[in-house]
Length: 59
View 1 (tube, rainbow, N blue to C red):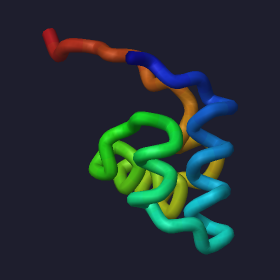
View 2: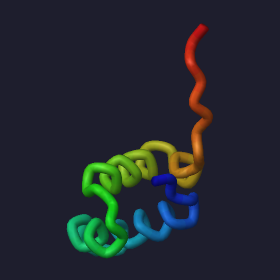
View 3: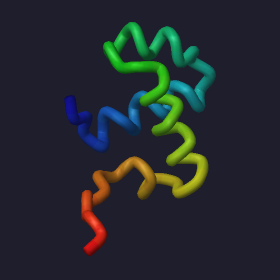
């Protein structure tokens, strides 16, 4: 399932405000690993880390 930028932002904001990843995982029915990946992308790239990235294959 694809999640919108806004949904990812809400979930990452919850983690940053101290909510437990396990709680958010159950609430939104998202794998804990996926939430952790979003948080890492936020930490590394900021808001742009949560935007949809184009999937390109190398030629």
